[in-house]
Length: 402
Image (cartoon, rainbow, N blue to C red; front, side):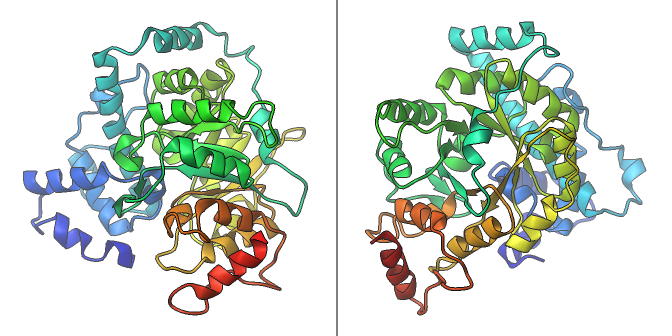
């Protein structure tokens, strides 16, 4: 079992043959804090238990009309099932999707702004067969071979470690991302997992708009939320976002295809998060022009997800590598970004790694972005720290930025 989840089963479950009410509540609390990235990283043993707990969730509670029905069978049908990795991940996808659907349902009950409802109606009224898919972000993220673009994600909470104590406000970090060379800014617009809301998207969009006419100019803003319903796409557009993220393992191919067309009707692009080669191909088949490999550690494993992609003639697909933060003070994430670039990825998505050193004058978020974009190679240089305190990394970053 992954050491990051060591002891989790014993902590969440009492060990009885059947899942009791207390255990279900424990797991529900844990699952509601999971980001889409962690879905792909949970061990099969926990995911199998998650499948049992989701059996008690009523599939009819899905918010969206025509939403994918839960693939979960009855207790008697699953009694002798051997849980595979894909089954486990699908089970967690269902569980997380239902949690998000509950959030969306509450948002709708509270009464969305009229501007959001107007955009939602536009989605419903648009003839999806005639809508033209926008490509502005895809073009921006795809540069010449041997270079890499950066998506910098703003968040207030680090995965598994709570709120960031010294993170700057979005209006202060937004220009840092722009001035140090990011191609786009993402905002983790899920309050439970990222500590941000759609108000943070608005704040970043407004700050970026202030750079109109400057060099560098405004960056496009991406709404990084767990999309389960088209009203979230309308909400993102109303906030000024130019793109949204959709997680294949949570909604499936049919919904990915629908959300791509829904977003296009409002002029938004979709980045599809995938964690396996099968999901990547399914995303392409659904019409995705941008896919992001998430929850996969190591450049080799990331490349394996896209290596055998079959892309129809005449279509282009931008590939993004989501860089997972390492649990140390070194800068291995920078090295991994270089390796992903050398393997042919067009872009890297960097999140937690930006905030490892807080607002350190050398290892601040802008320095990380600038170093990832540097034309260095692991063959000739390394950003890793040579001591336990990170001095080697500081010296290397200083060289890059001078």
